[in-house]
Every structure is written in structure tokens, then in C-alpha cells.
Amino acid sequence: MVPNNKEFPQEKSPLHLRNKHRGRYNFNELTQCCPELIPFIILTPAQEQSIQFSDPKAVLMLNKALLKYFYEMDHWTIPEGYLCPPIPGRADYIHYVADLLTSSNSGKLPKGDKVKCLDIGVGANCIYPIIGVKEYGWRFVGVDIDPKSIQSAIGIIHSNPLLQGKVSVRLQQNPHHIFKGIIQKDECFDVTICNPPFHASYEEAQAGTIRKVTNLSQKRAVNPTLNFGGQSNELWCEGGEIQFVKNMIIQSKIFANSCCWFTTIISKQSNLKKVYGFLEQVKAVQMKTIDMSQGNKMSRFVAWSFLNSRQQELFLNKEND
Image (cartoon, rainbow, N blue to C red; front, side):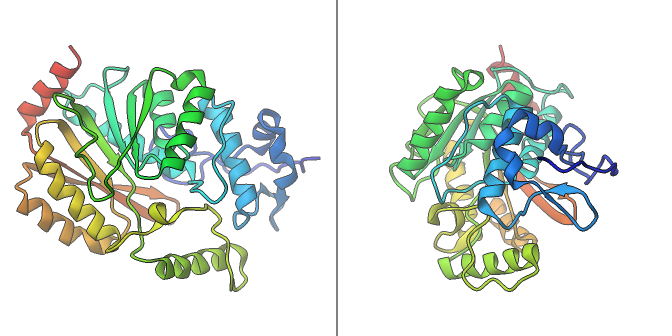
């Protein structure tokens, strides 16, 4: 039986105004939609319904419920050990990217399948395309270097009618390339998105996990399990976030006329100075940092373009003719 919930303030964090997750989770509604979540419901000391966020099985089931309730995903699963991301923050990125496109589109919010987005590192979970299709009706091409992630994403697409005809995925055969071998001749994208590997090594990722799980459970974690999962290519790469983003920026120059806006999450604020240095080196015409906030956590993404404002407007109008 699901414990009765008390009345609590409805708004939990300053998420984007269009983000469906601004309010506290309504576990009564979520469990009605997804009864599999019921065994994972707990009561906090304040007698509020929640789950144990240090438990990867509970986090996975919460995601399944959220995706079914808010995004029409009747069938969603990921291989064991793969990244199971927090959905509210992922949704924020999509909404702020929509605002970015709006700023280059005479103030008109872009909706519909004429808007095309390239998701670098789509992962086994296919989260960004799910949110973007449901919220705005965009089309997505998801890219990954991991064949198992690609197969998982294909399974999600084929199992959910909402995504069919709107989302496709491509395997990047060369892990050193980001856009080459993916963006085809004469192919254009309105925007690219990316949540790059955060850490520089397994050891660094493990240390971060110990801190996170300790904070969530209030107990020292010696051999922690990643509560949100994640494979090596999802969590760390040689040189970490800054090296990955540097490679992306340098390679984006080659496809300067193939995309209106390039964007990427920058997890470490201290990396921004270096990122802007790389952007100046490739002579990006426009550069922006968009801040996002999820409760006490601050995050951001950087956007750049090799087109000026007038060229962007023509680009978007041409794409949407």
C-alpha cells in the first residue's frame, strides 16, 4: 500500500517555466500510472512520500513512471548498468534550447517536425529525444559510440508510437570523431545538444560516486553502486569534460554551415574560461552561456554559432520552408 501523502508546497525548485517537473512528485498519480513503483515508495521523517535516491532500482522505476505519466512512454527500459538520468534536469536543457532557437527565430517558439536536433551521446536511455518529441514535436538524430546503447535506443523508439518517424539513431564508428561520419552531405540541423562525459578517469568517477551516495544515504559509501548508473563512455573519457568539449568545438568548425546552434552542457563552471578560449580560436561568431538551476544545483550549457543573427534567421526559415 502506498502511504498517504501530506500537503506540501507544490513548487520544489526554480526549473524552467515550461518544465513539467517544477512541482513535487505526486506519487499517488505516478503509482496509479505505474504500479511497479509502489514497492519503492518510502516516507521521509517529515512524512512525505519519496523514494530512496541512493537505490538504483528505485531511481530506474521512478524514471519509468515519470516517462509513462508525462511523456507517453509505455515501454522504456535500459540495459543493466547504463545511465539512468534525472529527468527534470534533462527536460530543463531541452526547454532552454527551445528558448535559444526562439531567440534566433524572431521570437517564435519553434515547434513541429521541421525542427531537427542532433543529440551527441544519445545513450541507451534516449531521454533527450523523448522529451523533445513530446514537448515540441521536433525530429532527432541520436548518436553514440556504443553499439549496445544504439540497440537500446532503437528498442525504445520501436516500442513507442510517439517516437516513430521522429527519432533515428546512428552509430559513430570512430570515437575520435563527433560530427564527421554523422552529419551527411547537405544535411542541416537547427541545433546540436550534448551532455559530455564529466570525469577524466574511472577513479575520478568512483570518487564522485562515493561523495554523491554518501550525501544521499548519510552513510559512508565504500563500494558504491552508481544510483544513476553509467558506462565508461557515458561518465568519463581521456582528458575529461574539457578535452571532449575542446574536440567538439574544433570539429564543429568543419560543419559551420550545417548547424544554426551548437550546444553542450558544461558541468564545471571553472571550465568556462577555457571553453570560451577554444571558441575564440575557431572564430565562433556568437557565444552564449545559459544558466540552469535545479534546486541547490546550478548547471549551464554553452551555445555557439558560426552564423550571425541574420544568417541564423535565414537558416531557420530555409529549413522550415
